[in-house]
Image 1: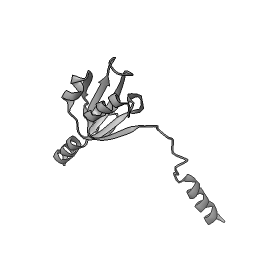
Image 2: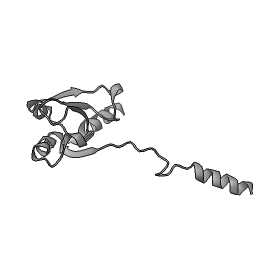
Image 3: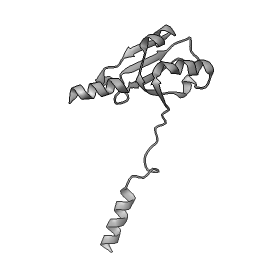
Image 4: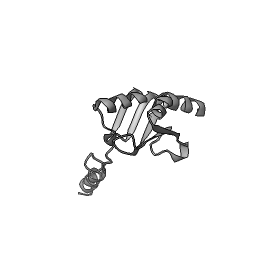
Length: 115
């Protein structure tokens, strides 16, 4: 009987999809992060629906030319592990908000240099 009780307790303590709290997060995957700006213009994507961009490259000049403030993120201040850039969308957009960016090519270089 003790064995059954122990097995039942282990089963009840295991994490399942239902036991984990959900953190709603909308991630956009792009080769070049700045192409999201075209999606906003075409209204195929909406800024309000994006929390994080994961991309291979990020042309900061394209963002700045369209009125987006680009700021480098210090490693100890990362909201998302691996994020290197914060995009602050201002008044020229449908909503004012911040979107974090993980630039995979930069992340790989950083991880290689850290060993």
